Amino acid sequence: MKKHNFNPGPAILPASVLQEASQAVIDYQGKGLSILEISHRGSEFTAIIEEAVTLTKELLGLNDDYHVLFTTGGASTQFYMMAMNLLNAGELASYTDTGTWANKAIKEAKPFGEIKVVASSKDKNYNYIPKDWAPAAGSRFMHLTSNNTIFGTQIQEWPDLNIPIVCDMSSDIFSRPIPADKFGLIYAGAQKNLGPSGVTMVIIRKDMVRTDLTHYLPTMIDYKTYIAENSLYNTPPVFPIYVSMLTLRWVKSNDGLKGMQAINEKKANLLYNEIDSNPVFKGTVATEDRSLMNVCFVCEDATLEAEFEADAKKAGCVNFKGHRSVGGFRASLYNAMPLESVQVLVDTMHDFTKRKG
Ligand code: PMP
Image (cartoon, rainbow, N blue to C red; front, side, top):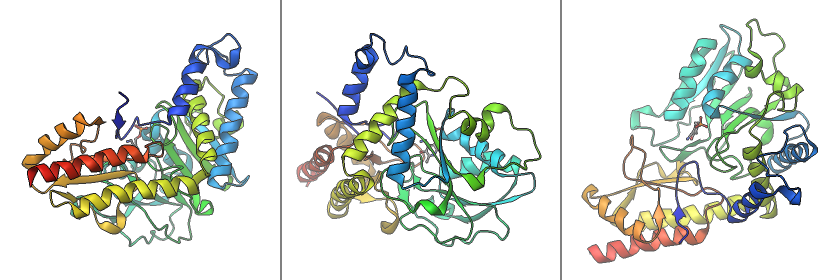
């Protein structure tokens, strides 16, 4: 039986994408070669990466001022690569501290510039999004984490700033429309809403690319390398890029980001409504900042959690345990998660409460 996979990442991918990708592993387009065996410089892969770039721009509404790049090393590598590319020593950048990943972004950027943390929700174990987002005067950019995967909070309203936003969108890219022109740079590990792990998407506006850096950038750490070589300076992660392209096609054929947002809201509302109306469970974050991607909740009586988890497992729901720093449960409802799977989890919660009551 196919499981209902609530994993936070690597995460569920559309069934049709898995089907097509698995066929391509055996024989890509009837060419007698696996997608894993083709050259990254051949016409087949050129077409794949070009389509991935075109679909990304189309779906996110990016004009020709933006480059779409594919890198490796995960979003974790972007924490420092981005800072090394955007800042000279002593230059200022503002950051918001909204959780574990934001913290890592701050830590990794610090050696390369003057990093000012201008807002934080650490006082309440990151259970809300701080709204006092005034960047420090003279900042070159403001760094935001759009969706805090571990704590289950998500930015619902983008601030109006007079400087570019640099955003870690690892866990909600392509899940909803965005006001593209606010962003100077977006980065995201693929393994939640886009594809398998192993590739990272970086979107950079042309005016953010520095030609006046005073320090040396190793070739593979320099965005200009990826821009000049269309992400093909070295051997890229061919298969993850291919699967990402298939997922982008799937997103497009499901009414694009508007379609994703509509279904994501439906799924999240279904689960949050159950959490709010069921006396056994409670949510863990401020209602207005709730994530549509990672729904975090606990049992009012923590001693019931193991028993509920066992019930849900019996119903085929897997990988929804909360992160060790939060506890309880976290159901990740990325784009590819069907409404039916969320309904199974909700029915299990309902039945559990009936049995206990
Ligand atoms: N940022 C966010 C918001 C994440 O959720 C994650 C991974 N869960 C990361 C960064 C780190 O990504 P990676 O594992 O690709 O380095």
